[in-house]
Each structure stands twice: as C-alpha cells, then as structure tokens.
Image 1 (cartoon, one colour):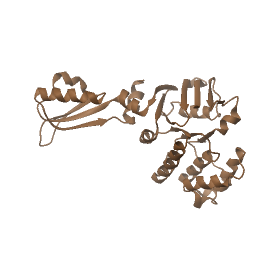
Image 2 (tube, helix red, strand yellow):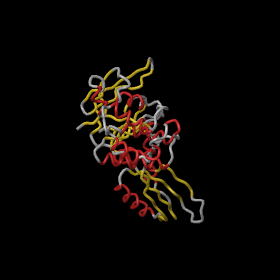
Image 3 (tube, helix red, strand yellow):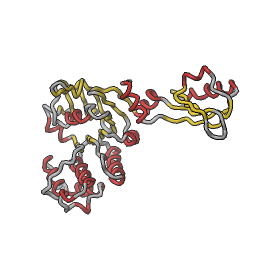
Image 4 (tube, one colour):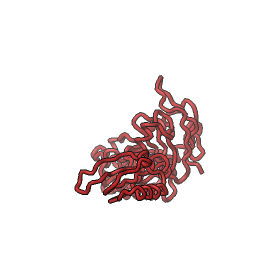
Length: 307
C-alpha cells in the first residue's frame, strides 16, 4: 500500500516557484529520505503533506486520503516533527501530551504516553513545565507529540538539528523500532551520515524539483561510483588508464613512487586495472577500494543536476 502519494505538486509564492511539479510515491513501511540544500522546497513539500499549505496544482494523499478534500482522515494518519521549537509555556510535559491526544479524540491514552516518554527519556520531566526545559528536551517533547496518536506515517523535519549525541541515539533507536513495526518514516536532514545510515530510498530536491530518486545502494553505485586507490612502489600508470584518474600525487615519503585514485563503477572493473598495471611492470605497494558515500553523491548532484 502507498503511504504517501504526491502527484505533480506545484506551489508558488508570487515570482518564487517553491515546488515545480513534484511527484513521489512512498510505500508503507519505508524509511525514506528527503534531501536538498536550503531553499530546495523540502519544508514547503512537508507543509503540503501536513495540510498546512494548499498546492496550486497537484495533490497529496496519505493512505489514500487527500490532504485537502479528506483532511481529517489524512491528518489522523500523520505525525509531523517540525523543525522549529513550538510549545505552550503553560503546560507540563504530560499535560502537553494529553492535550495532543485530545486533538485526535483519544481518551485514556496515558499508557502509550508513558511509553513514549520512557523511550525518549522524558519520564523524569513529566511534571515539569515546558518553559523550564532545555532546547534538547523541548525537541524530545515535539517528537512525543508527533507520536502520541500512533500515526502510521511519521515525518521528521530536521529532528536532530542542534541536539546532543544522546538525544540522537535515543531518537533513532525509538524511530527504528517504530519503522520495524511497520510505521512509514520520512526524514529530512542536513546530517547526511544519518540519512545514509537510516534511509532505504532517497529523493533529492533542487530548486523545487526532484533531481534524484533511487535506493541508497543504487545511488552510491550508479551515480558516484567508487575509488580504487593504488600506491605504486615503482613504475608508472599506463597511458590507457589515465582517463580513470580522479586524483594523483607524488609520494613525499621514503618509499618513493606515485599514488593514484582511479574511478571504478563496479567491482568487476578492478581486476582488469590490476592486470594492466602488472603487464606494464608497475609494482603495487598498497591499494584500497573506497566506496563513495552520500555526501559525495549529494555534492555531485547539486553541482551537476545529475539524475
């Protein structure tokens, strides 16, 4: 079943086109990454999914419920952790979560509230007023608010921005558990190592359009490739391999020789390169196959707009 269906969504603010025909299908149970530089349209798209912004063109549906025409059912299926710290200064943590439960018509929800607070290490802050909490604790409460009605779809907009390592580990442990239990998770983050570790598929936005959409492994394999780093103790790189060079340097150490980084697309590309080096008489002192990471891919796509 499709958890979120985004179809040809456009949104403009006067002369600024924030979204230019975005189409995405996010399947139930996916851990999906939505990435892009500042101003790419991520927050506008999330606000559209949440029903806070109406698209000029196109539609968004959550579990088959249109966020505009069937907004009540759509919002009941969705939990959003916003990027900004928004809270009511007149309530304690528990009161805040009980109030949030009431928005969704949930009575006697204290058992789940207690579990969420325990998972997010908020139990000892349950009766503390919101305005007395640190920024990191307030962000934990925002996560708890988004989860208080057990939504099948969870959207996290920069959930770990400006928070400590402990909260990151606590949050990802809980969110990973919910994902394993079948919840769909959509993540936007500038911490690309988090996205690489957590997400199964990734969409990259640039200037309001999707410029890349694939599984994490396929993006790494197809778009950026890998680097075969070879340190030659003697000999030199044959001329017919020089078109693969992405970086080379003369070794300043005592061993002499040269060090090269060669682009390879598949593991099967490695053996022909090594065979050609042996044939030319070059002697390899060290070698390493280095996999590209999400940051390499992100920079390449944002620079070139590659699909």
